[in-house]
Image 1 (tube, rainbow, N blue to C red):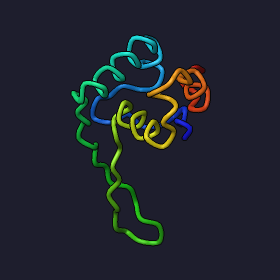
Image 2 (cartoon, one colour; image 1 turned 120 degrees about the vertical axis):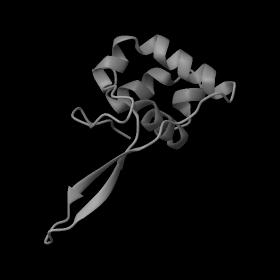
Image 3 (cartoon, rainbow, N blue to C red; image 1 turned 135 degrees about the vertical axis):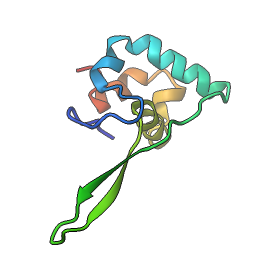
Length: 96
């Protein structure tokens, strides 16, 4: 999974650059909460976007940044639960 540079912020209003400013601290805290089963996902931000070929709109859910990281970590378990975290950060472009 690659986090887009211009990805929309969720309800937490935290973007990739803000999270990366304290990346080690933020990831360590996230992993701690996951291990302690204290992690609680944020509500999804609901926005409506135009439906192509119609005047109607369709709902779109935008998760918070940490929720995106957890989802990606479940797909690529090596990020959260092993020493390969740097590899995951590189894969998601969080380090850039």
